[in-house]
Amino acid sequence: EAGVTQSPTHLIKTRGQQATLRCSPISGHTSVYWYQQALGLGLQFLLWYDEGEERNRGNFPPRFSGRQFPNYSSELNVNALELEDSALYLCASSFVSYTEAFFGQGTRLTVV
Amino acid sequence: KNQVEQSPQSLIILEGKNCTLQCNYTVSPFSNLRWYKQDTGRGPVSLTIMTFSENTKSNGRYTATLDADTKQSSLHITASQLSDSASYICVVSAQTNAGKSTFGDGTTLTVKP
Image 1 (cartoon, each protein chain N blue to C red):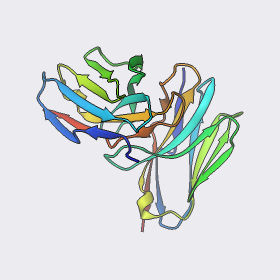
Image 2: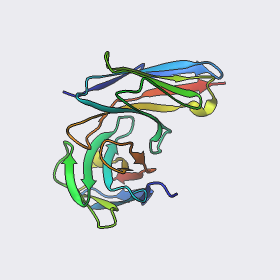
Image 3: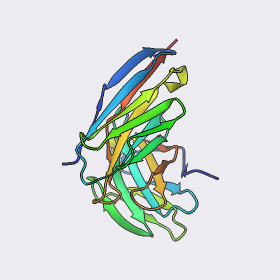
């Protein structure tokens, strides 16, 4: 069974551009979570999608947004990129909320 | 405020030795506690998940314990291997504020030959 897959693996953007990150959850999982992990820091919760709806978001500005598609895959968009947005962005999925979440390998976003 | 504190921040041990990592939390009402292993630059990989009624769970050389009364958990690694070098993250979920688990900052373990 395939795990959580994220694309691209690496992404380099210049300041002010937009970045789009994608996540495919484990088959059957309906919840998708997005996290930001800056270098040397812990995971910071970004967004939670379940059944196509945004259910919760962390303390990030509105330029961090996303959506979940009918097949439960998800997209994270970061507008007006800033240098400090450089981080590993992790996606996780779970069958229902509160249960164990499985992580993808992440997208390394570098803003120059 | 829900918090998860892990200790020590970093740990260096020799190959073959045992070690124990600590996790204290204030998350309430408690739903579950998970331990993850994260290699540098990679996504976290689940080691164990425990609910309120479970006080110990093993996964190979990894054994997690949970004391829901004192709100403490530990991860014990037996006969460490070089491949155990990683960051170990404790994550606690509440029954409310769905989807917003609270992450500890992790313990960085280095196993030396």
